[in-house]
Amino acid sequence: MKIMLTINGLDVAAHFSEQDVATVHKPLLQRLAALHAAAPHQRTIVFLSAPPGTGKSTLTTFWSWLAAQDPHLPALQTLPMDGFHHYNDWLDAQGLRPYKGAPETFDVPKLAQNLRQIRAGQGTWPQYDRQKHDPQEDALQVTAPLVVVEGNWLLLNDPAWRELREYCDFSIFITAPAAALRQRLVARKQAGGLSEQEAEAFYQRTDGPNVERVLTSSVAADLTLMMTENGDYRF
Image 1 (tube, helix red, strand yellow):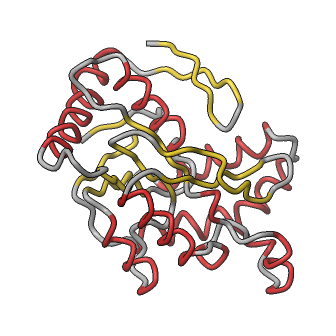
Image 2 (cartoon, one colour; image 1 turned 60 degrees about the vertical axis):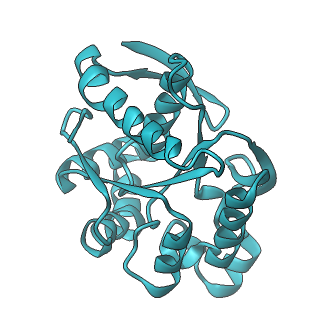
Image 3 (tube, one colour; image 1 turned 180 degrees about the horizontal axis):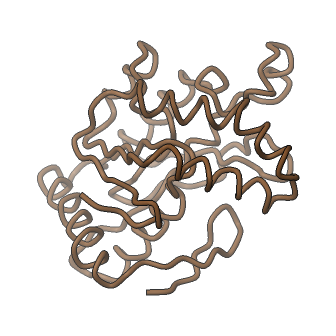
């Protein structure tokens, strides 16, 4: 199945095999639908945590599209965690801008506040502005009964991040071979205009440590998916 998805304002071509849709993605959405049906009067919040390079944004946007095609599934909205980065002024003051994306560069209390609001009812969600490279407040109106919050650190084994589990009804973790993630992340930076040397340096400074930390320092999820070397997902 080839499909065009809009992710962060950009059109992205995605491909999912019909077999994987039937054996992985639809069964997973049906499981989340059953979870919501057990408590239909409140919003169901799912955490999807995974290292960089595992295609979280594409995957969750596809899930949202797939749910919309089936009248038996509740509407699903994907909520990226990137909008909770601290502003660049704050990062510069702390000397953290070169490490943007690490756990320390996120405003965890602000994320908890937004999760509390959307659990209670209607709320908004910030989005990361990739032109300004800063959060854009209230960019998304949260309306769906089922939401998937996706990011690297949602299951981090750290006191501040563990407190977020209060707002999580179900958690999913994606694991993947570290070598495959390195190849994907370096290629992504080169596609964005960096030289091979610059892309490798960025990986060593930022992406690589983040990949290792997510893979080794996340608490167990309710469900784990494996991303294969060719980008497919398996239970």
